[in-house]
Length: 250
Image (tube, rainbow, N blue to C red; front, side, top):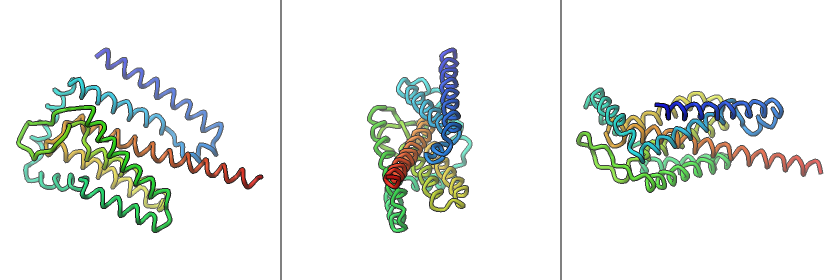
C-alpha cells in the first residue's frame, strides 16, 4: 500500500508540475498555444494515460494483478446473460483487421478526395502506429490469456488487447480529424467514438479472451498514440505557418 501511495504522490506532483508549466505557457504565448493546439490539461492527461499504461504493463509482467483480474472477469461473466454474447462478438468484429483495414483505407481515400491530405495521412499513420505498438508490446509481454470458461481461441499474448488499442487510437484520431472537417459534428462523433472504443474493450472481457488490465492498458496506449500523432501534426502545421510568414515578410 505504501508503494501505491508513493507512486500516486509522485504522479500527482508530476501532473501538477505539467499543469503549472502549461498554464504559464498559455498565459505568456496565448496565440502560439492556440495555434499549436495546446488545450488545458492535455499534457497532464497524456502523462496520466502513459503512467497508467506503464504501471499496468509492469503488473502484467510481474503477475501482481492476476488476482484482481480474475475476480473482475468472473464477476462480469456472471453478470452478462449468454443471450448477449453474440452482440459482444459483433462488437469485437468491428475492431478486427478485416473490418479496420478496409474501413481505414476507405476513410483515408475519402479524406484525400476532399483534399484533406493532412487528416488522411494522420489517420493512416495513427492506425499503422497502433498496429505496430500492439505487435511490439505483445512480443515483450508474453502473458497467458484467460481460461476461466470455454471461449473461442485467440492467438498471441494477452497483453494488451489489440482490438481495443487499435480501435481506441482510430476513434480518438477520427474525433480530431472530423472536428477539423466538420466542427459542429464533433460532439456527436466524440460520443460515438468513445462508445465504440468502450464497447470493443468490454466485448473482449465478455468473450473471456483478455484480462481487465489488458483492456485498460489498451485504452490508455491507444489514446496516447492518437493524441501524440495529432499533436505532432499541429506542430508541423505551426512550423509551416511560421515559415510562410517569414517568407512573406522577407
